[in-house]
Image (cartoon, rainbow, N blue to C red; front, side, top):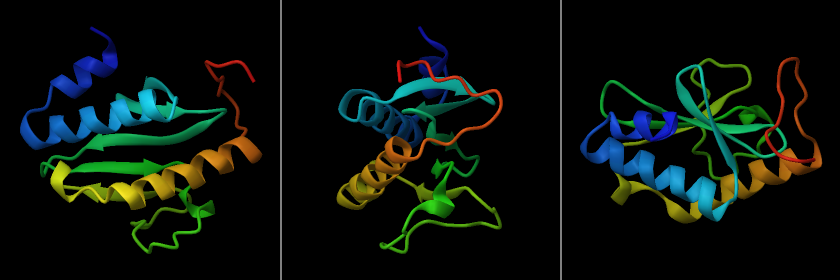
Amino acid sequence: MSDVDHYIYSYDGKQRELLLYLHRYFTEELNLYCKMRYKIPFYDGKSWICYVNALKNGEVELAFTRGNELSNDQGLLLEKGRKQVRSLIFDKLENLPFQVLNEIMQEAILLDQIKPYSFKGFQSQREP
């Protein structure tokens, strides 16, 4: 079992269901690479795109590392006092806005493809 699987299966119920769905969506449908960083799963294209974080209150946060550069046309991305990161909070799979999630993910992936974020220490696991 991978570190990511250990992370996902360390949670129960709605959190596990959300984490598992998002992980499969990112890796299988969007073809993103997943790696544990800071003890949580990060999803990469050419650079870091997003990460998921299981919150203590039972919700799951999906955070975009370059969220400040996303349009937020839907008005759902939360700043929470952060300069760069923006996030969505989900409480259960049934409340996941699939179409909106797909729109935001497509924009984040396009941003990553057009203008990959470059910072010291990042090394993509994929060929350029």
